[in-house]
Amino acid sequence: MAAAWARFDDYSEDEAPAFRAVIDALAAELPEGSPLGPFERACAWDSTGRSDLAVPLYREALARGLSGYRGRRARIQLASSLRNIGEPEEGVKLLTPELDAPSDELDDAVRATLALCLSSLGRDREGLSLVLGALAPHLPRYQRSMANYARLLVEPED
Image (cartoon, rainbow, N blue to C red; front, side, top):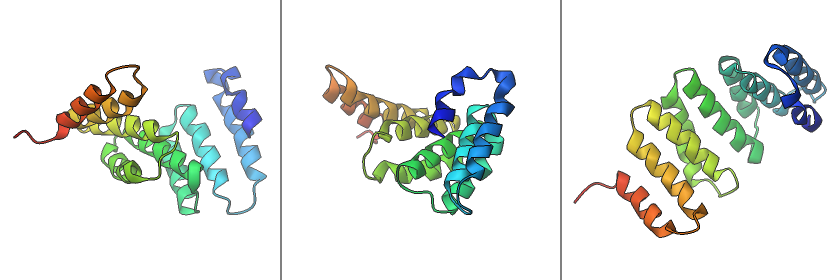
C-alpha cells in the first residue's frame, strides 16, 4: 500500500481510475472485515477528487473500528470531505472532540480542517482563532502574542 501511495503523483488526472484500481486490488488482499480496506479506498477516492464517494467508505472504516493514528486521519479526512460535499456542520461535530484527544503530529491538521469547516459555516473568527493557535508554537518569535490574539478572537469582550 505504501508503495502504491508513493507513486500517486505519477498518475495523471485521467489515470485516476487506474490508481483507484491498484488500491482496490490491495485492499481486497486484507482480511474480511478489516477497517483498513475501506479507509485506503476512501483515501483513493478522496485524493482523486471524489469526496462524495469517499465519505461512506470513511464511515465504514470507522464503524469497523479503525482507531489510533489511522482513525484520527480518517476523522480529519472525513470532516474535510463532508465540508467539500456541503456538510460542514457534521465535520465540526466530528472534529471538535479531537481538540481534546491525546496530542500527536496531526493536531495542526485537526485545527486546520476544523477551521475550514467553521469558515464554511460563517464562523470565521473561531476558525481564525484555531489556525492562529496552531501556528503560534511554530513561530520563531511572537508565540505568546499570537496565542493571546487567537484566544481573544473567541473570548467574550468585557
